[in-house]
Length: 605
Ligand SMILES: [Zn+2]
Image (tube, rainbow, N blue to C red; front, side, top):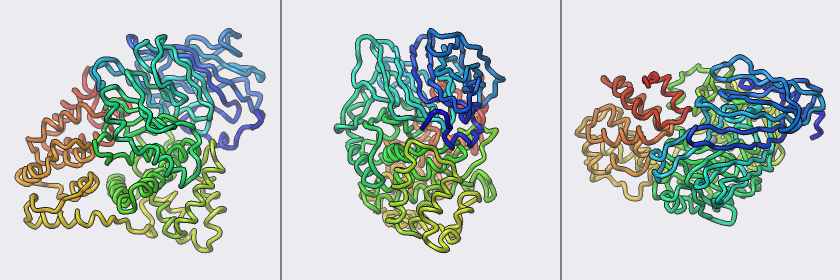
């Protein structure tokens, strides 16, 4: 694109960024950082190459909890520039205003992070799997990149980057970029990202990490004690990439590697380009939880290639990704398997809808998150209602027509941003308008701008769950657990079974189930997360230690939120939840603690 005109996505204003990319935007970053584990800071320089579309004399960047030391124009040795940090907003942070000339090509900012850098989690050796070295990782989505890099922190702004990172020589740094596969004795590493990405995909991890290849273009990084199991768990990675390419076109990011993080990672996964970050809670030993990897991989198209222009359009990232994820799983493991994932997702959607209420605007696909922290406003709706819209579309136009549409959509909008209104007009033009009456039948507007689920949505079912529902019936009609036919059940059947149990179970019932199926000592995090709400409600003592261990070691918010809520709903729950939280908090990332500080109150230091 010529540098004198701004892309049309810059005309959509982002309520979560101070930047004004329509006037002047950034297009390349040179980052120079030193990682100091003793001080727990990153310090260095960010040099931004500018595209000044409007002859602007001020560059606006987002910054939060950063110490800005100096700003220069046209090189780190260039002219000192006037700059100013605006008022500090608890969610957005501060606007960093730099005075520039219309002909200024680059701005360099010397800065350091502070303990308030919410993207960063600094782990002590005891908080890692190997327990010998410290660990650092970032989580930049949704608007936390600005806590470790002064940037235009809006998903509509893309840039390429190069980075030089200095770490202690015995540790390995990795980024969302071309990565090293082995340590070097200097601790100095360079990274290159040649495909333009938005700031929320900036990522860095530093730890005692090793690499194992899985195919010519895929591999896995993990701490040495975790690596063999992880490599075993992710054997299908190349097949997943191939399946994804068969569906919706070539993988555009060269390598696809995974990084297994320590258990405090707050999410299941984060789709950092070229290097997906994943929670170790999917290492189940039987490859049963790898749909999460299919999800993060699918983001290499929906999200990373075609990106929501603001967080209000988040469903464009997540709805497509969930649909795509299940199509990958279907290709690898068959329709009956993928149908189970669909039903489990649907169950989660119904829970969220019930929780938010029938008229909640937070159940619209297009959201209004202005004035709120996007991390708190984003929920299951974008994922599962977004997927359900695509599933309904598939039901109405047929799979072949929908697949052609999606494949073209990705190809034609690669490395660009998309907002909801533009997507709807593209959908009408490319698909709906060719079928008279289809838009009314689909009830498109009410999916996107209305609450709940439109009546047109087809029912969701999984044949493999029929046996589970039968077992549930039998058990509730006095068939002993030991007599139930549960052979060949995967963890998905078990989760469906646990979710289908009555909410109130007696200690005798829990004891029978536990003695027969060994839920309390399951090595599968999804099974544990579905089991504990029952044990919490009944104050089932034999699960107490395992629950405590889970809550103090796992930082994945999806598991923790329902468990803390279940605790709070019991008679002595307030006090107990707070006590456990006080012990566990130091092990949670800031995106989890901000949720739980609101739910439970911040414990006294
Ligand atoms: Zn996702």
